[in-house]
Image (cartoon, rainbow, N blue to C red; front, top):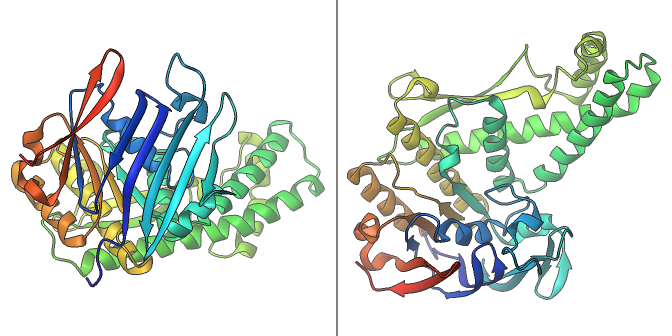
Length: 373
C-alpha cells in the first residue's frame, strides 16, 4: 500500500482520566505495545483512544464514570492526530455529571464529526464470548463495524431507537388507536430500512476484504438473520409489517419486528462449522480475522488503515498466531495499540513497535517507555 500509516496518534495527554492523574505519551506511527500487571491502567489508555470515535468508547461507560476517583473534578484527553496528510488537535472532556464534550482544532464539534477524521476498531476480552452469548452483543459488534464505514449509522440507529421506545410505550399502555402509531412507525420504517441497508453494505465489504487477502487467521462467513421471519427490505415494506404486527406487539408489550431483532450468524468458512460450536481458540481467531478484514476494508474505503485497539490480544492465541498477527498489523501499516501482562508477549515485534510499561504507583498509573525486548 502506498503512503501507509497516514492515520496515527502523535501524542496522547490525559488529565484525571481513570487511574491516570496526569500522563503524556509521545509517539510515532508504529504499533504501540503496552505491558504491565493487571489493574495498572493499561486498558484505561486504550479506552481514552477509543473516544476518538462516536459513542461511549470500548467500555461503553458514562462520561462521569471515566473521571479519576476520588478527585471528582472531571477529566480531559487531548490527542494530536495525523490523519490523511492533515494534523488535528482533538480534545474530549467531561465535568461532573455533564455529557462528554468534543473539540476539534479548538472548535466545538459533535461526536459524529470524529468519524470524518479518524476510524477506530477494537477487540477486548469482553468480546471473546461474542458467538455464544446473546444476540444483543453481536448486533452491537455489527453496528460498530458498520459505523466504521458509515459514521452516520450512529445517528440513524439513535433515531430508530427513540421512535421504537415511544412505540413500545404506547404498546405497554395498550393504546389501540392507530393514529398514535402512524408517525412513529413511519420513522421506524425509514430509519430501520437504512440500518438494514448499512449493515448489509458493511458485511459485503468485510466479505470482500476476507476473500482478497491471504492471512494466517480463519475466514468467517457472516450472515444477517432475524429472530422471527425475514427483515423487510424497504421502508414501505417495513412500515406495512409494523402495522400488520401491531396486534401481536400489543400482546407482547414491545415491537417484535425490525432491525433490533437482527442477529449476526458466523461460520468458520474452511470447516463449515458455526462459530458458536468452535473452540475458544478458534472463536478468538475468527474475531481477530474479522477485525483485520475490517481494517483492510477501511484502508481502502477511508484512505488509511484505522487505529486498532487490541486489549489483552495474546489471550487464546498461540505463539505462531500471535507472531502472524503482528506481521499482518505491520504489513497493513496500522498504529495498533496492544496490551498484555508482560513484555515477552510482544518480543516478536521488536523495534517494529514502540514499547511502554504501565505500573501502579501509590494508586496512580505511571507510564515508562521501554527499549525493544
